[in-house]
Image: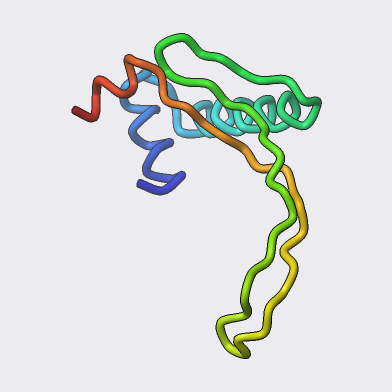
Length: 90
C-alpha cells in the first residue's frame, strides 16, 4: 500500500474527505519527525513506539569496485510494533 492508497482507506473508514485525511496524515508524519529530531520518543499504546538509535561508523564494500569503504555513523528511526498491531498480523 502506498501513501495515496492509505489516504483513500483512512478517509473511507473515518468518514472524512481525502483532503482532510491527507492533512491529518501529513501533520502526524511532521509531528513524529520533529519529536524524533528533538531526541524524544513517541509511544502509542497498542500501536507501537517510534525512537531514534545511533548507528556506528562501519566498514563496507562497494559492490561495483569491491573496494572497501567507510560508511559514516548516522541516526536511524526505529519502530517497535505494539501488541494490538502485532495481533492483526497473526
